Image (cartoon, rainbow, N blue to C red; front, side):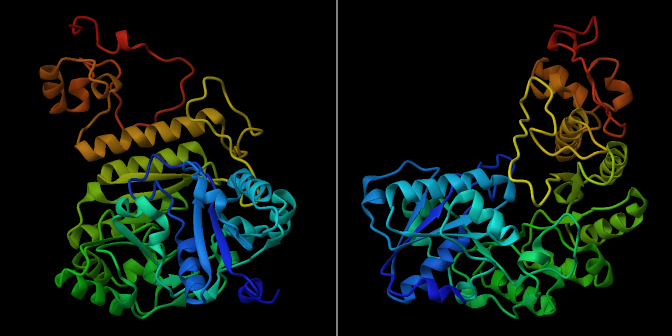
Length: 431
């Protein structure tokens, strides 16, 4: 089939399926993993007179879901390591709608088309972006009751990326970098979340940000956020972009620090640019990829710099682009191995867990402007009056009272034993 429209010949009804992907508990904006691609496709199909229906397999199925009689089923995919969820969606389709032609598209389908078809058993794999639906407003009506819960709109001002990072598959899925001059006609909600892979690389970024400033001043939009980190190299070349980002209502700015700790001066310069534009350090996050080329110690050194600067860390655990599973369990009571999830040759399971733990505690300290972290304090295992007293103390002072106090300016290595809560308070300070 030469293009997407070839799939639509003779089609009257299309079922769109969002597999039951695991939900993130870390993201307050994207925990629902909104299938914006399917919603755009629905708008395009309806413009051609085709009836559509969306089934989100994580939700409870309704009788009307199974009564729908589609000619074509379109299933989205995301990360390759969530391939099982896509296969389950194909199996569901074959079981309940055996006469329908089943197509899988999205990230997994585009990165590994042959493996996707073999593994899922679908009838066809659609690679890349469906251009016919690219500039169409998403069909939020398909969400039903869930529509009222969505207070944001996902937008793209560009596709692709000007970088070719080894750990990222964007340049394979979207090989051509394409930019928009304006998104004004696409806006239907006040809160915008940009899903651009490299927002600042848009050649029209200044015009675009000025457009957003005007829209914010006229109260058409209220705030903006970028899912991906801002390109620090571009920010250093044009610091004025930070001011425009602030005036446009961007919140929670993120920067990427993918490589060596030796580049810390550049990261500090980028943070300073954002701070001078009006962003608070504690609202800034630094993306760090771990379980990758740099080892645990170097990642900790980078984290320590971030603590000195008063910024948060967004940790990104590396998974290979061709791995079909990821059974990492943050609550596992027994050690996990490379059979469970990808552990890079220079990392261990203990280090993966410890770094994630360190980042979490680091961020708590940054958000609450504390010089130390204490599990006992977080779990409210100490009297409130003592907690308030300890909060204003330096680490050197508080360690005389809280034996579990940790200084985020120090590397916290994996431990094979844990102190019980009863031992958190130094003898004599227990109440």
